[in-house]
Length: 242
View 1 (cartoon, helix red, strand yellow):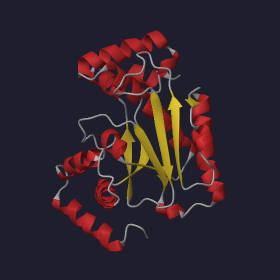
View 2 (cartoon, one colour; view 1 turned 180 degrees about the vertical axis):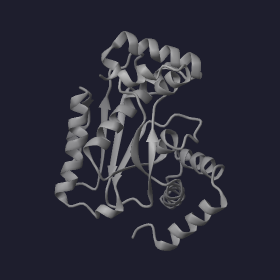
View 3 (tube, one colour; view 1 turned 30 degrees about the vertical axis):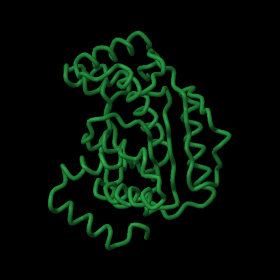
View 4 (cartoon, one colour; view 1 turned 120 degrees about the vertical axis):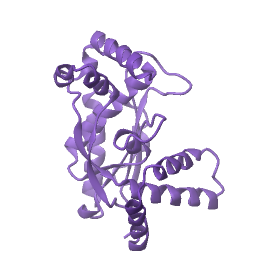
């Protein structure tokens, strides 16, 4: 059973995790919802790839700030998707939100045959919306450029980390909070994408409000070793759009 259906226990664990980890309660709550949505989608879409800034937080644990959007694509091995797979992707997102009773507030702005869609789903927050953190899970899907290289990675959430720290894995198992495997874009490719994004925004005179990419690039470089830096060179030489 998912934890949020037991509201009192959910709130108690959020507060306890917040006190132990030093993370605000509303961030722990949103991280929980982002994680359960990500897990449900990974179970529905076998060739799905999780990428972008949130993957740096959820899988690589290298960012000091909270990333909230879920960026998804298909693996390069699966090939460019036709209309049927694009519809399948949209159906998976919509059905997942419906299963959790999260309303997609911009569904009429999405299209099944598009290469890019953005879904904004409202979750039932205990703490309400703030100027900094919206009570919505944002899922972005982009399939025009498929993702490579990819690796498998474990994903968890803050409440699980708290329970692991106090040796209460039994609660994590009871409320379906255990880490799970997911296919993600490698950190080297994420760096390349962010460098290209900064260049594109600059050429389009849209550099304002994109400092987040610079922050991510800085944090990535802090953890790369010489072998991984050589891997970046190979990604560029092979052509990231192939």
